Length: 275
Image 1 (cartoon, rainbow, N blue to C red):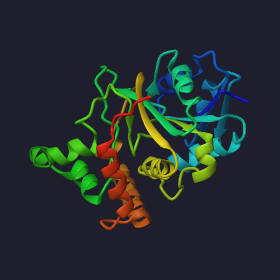
Image 2 (spheres, helix red, strand yellow):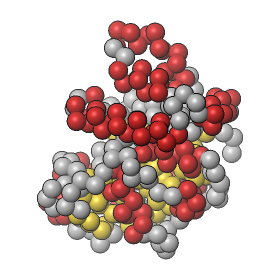
Image 3 (cartoon, rainbow, N blue to C red):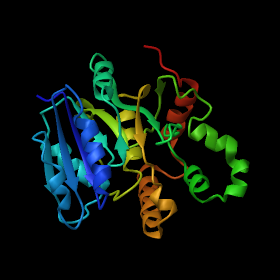
Image 4 (tube, rainbow, N blue to C red):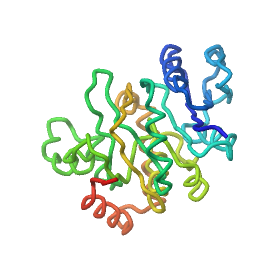
């Protein structure tokens, strides 16, 4: 049994970026394994995966973010209690995995942990969120900057900006850039929904885990995230984002979603967690 198994899905990412993510994950005394799942059209990433703890999987085509991670999750089923979903643009210092694991292991009711996520300059990324409504996603993505103050209060609540990002919080939606997932939760709720090619698959999985387990923001350790916000710069990625949003609300409900209302109200009343 491994202490932690991780997976990183890559698609034409710079070699330096991938190398840094791999090095960060392997810089531990824990017994770990890392799957590098390559959705790129060529296998040049293979040369970065020489460490015996790394398994390289070349898909020959882009199967999507969630589907890529699912390959690793299914391949490692039964070999670990915790699976880390890692973005290739994330890096971190030694000790992060150890501290996350030491917090999670005695608390089997935690289904998912996310550490504090920082920009490369050390500033905070507000990646804790409530379950989205269609209005939340539209305002956050398409409202012109000059009009953003009109929705400031709503977006502040949606992104937990009115909470202390230095405190442990119970959060319905945590970012897929770094998730440490309890495999017992995956066995109950399933893996990523592969109908989402890119975007919203992390929201969907968080929601399913939150229904049965705790989903916790744990700021006692931090990782760094490039956070390219590709859908803001690429029409193709923006279309993936829109299609995923349509699929998400078709699955869970548009404005009539009683469970979302209940979960968000509960989260708003009980942000902080005492351990």
